[in-house]
Amino acid sequence: MLEIRVLEEGTVQVRGRLDAAEADRALAELNPIPGPLTLDCSGLDYISSAGISVIMQTLKRLTSQGSRLTLIELKPRVRNVFVYAGLDKVLDIR
Amino acid sequence: MTDSIEQAVERSLSSLPHLVGLVREFLEREKLSQELAFDMDLVIEELFTNLVRHGRGGGDIEIQLTHVPGEVHVRLRAAEPSPFDPTTAPRVNVNLPVEERRAGGLGIHFVRELCREFRYEWRDGVGTTLVVVGVSE
Image (cartoon, rainbow over all chains, first blue to last red; front, top):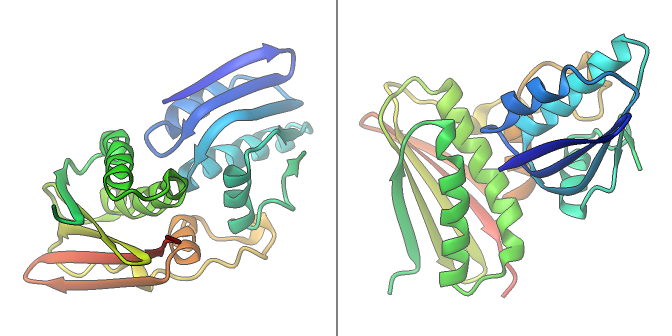
């Protein structure tokens, strides 16, 4: 189960599992949110290639608008998935 | 008691939460670390989702998890009218800039990253994918 919650201006908390079953809903919830956007991933337990696709589509949307995306507080296993994908150096991960 | 667990699940993305539960049940029963769950979930989701989205067959997908010393074997069996072999998927170059990468293929790339073995066979209209994940015991 995935939960996406706007914490404050520009910061969104993503909690739970960002998998293929939740990817479409996640993208639909993120799409209306303007940048610059910080995703607080401290509660994100799992991500798959479908979840990575949601993050990359959000990055492309914000970049095309001249804005930016930052990911913070990734758990080690979740961070590993970005490393496997070669995206740890492409994304602003703190 | 057998060291294997096997179930047929609906060929649908809505089956993913059920597969997550199945992995945890298996790890608990085999007294394996729940630390293995993340990598097993990732391998199973990517292979299962590949079948749901791109497979040409119908009907349920059978999943079998087997514990042998030092390894977990994951088998996915699905009816396919012709071979649908994920091991032949083109490799993804994760060192390319994002805009130069072709779409797709990342899921199978994760499977290759996480498995010791990755095999496929097709016989009499049924495709079987086997992946072997190493475990420390």
